[in-house]
Image (cartoon, rainbow, N blue to C red):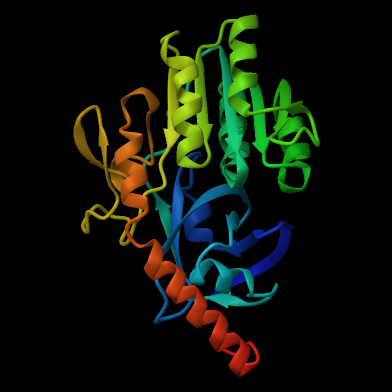
Amino acid sequence: MYIIEKSLKLSENVYEIWVNAPHVTRNAKAGQFVIIRIDETGERIPLTISKISGDLVRIIFMAVGKTTHALAAIPTGGTISDIAGPLGCPSEIKQYGTCVLVGGGVGIASTPVIAQALKDAGNRVIGILGARNADFLILEDEMAEICDKLLIATDDGSKGYHGFAADLLKQVIGEEKVDAVWIIGPTIMMKVTSNVTREQGIKTFVSLNPIMVDGTGMCGSCRCIVDGKTKFACVDGPEFDAHQVDFDNLMQRQRYYMEHEKEALALWKEHQCTCGGQQ
């Protein structure tokens, strides 16, 4: 069993947990992920590594389905059955020059560890964080400490620029030379934002979040189309060249089990009500 040393709510339906997992922290690099299982009968869910501190790995996630809601309900001091990792290929970190990291929604969780790695490699790092409104904005202070420059966008204008992260990326590219860009967030956001860098030919990475089961390339559930070829996000990614990703295919595959997910969450909530939250 692995102890959750710290658990807290960051914003509506967004949670942060710190798990004691030395086998993960010893080898983890920016851009990688873990697979968590709450108990012996639970499903396996992939979650991105947000930060490493000693033997603790930070994971930030949004409670949207049955398992993420159950994970959010585990208090500080509680335990989970399994945490496997680090998995996936690390981010392609090297000295590019000026790098821009664009985080949208809960995708912001992945940006600090990549930003720090890029800074350590000698890059100038510009961060762009986008959220629905100020209440959904996370890790602003942490990113401000790492980045040479940090820009904020909210859909409703409640903080920073009134608009989308893609608009701010256009502004940055118009003002200075950008050598590499990372975009992490909802799939539609990554698709739209990556179009900003396409015409300029700026190297752009996106971190894909397809349906995933085993995380080792055996089941094939996380397959996606990149440069016209089938890739497995768990072993070939999760980061890919944004300009080669078939985002429409990815979004279609992400919708396959939506009704099953809704049914599982409804049954879990019903069980919580009838048994007073006891598992």
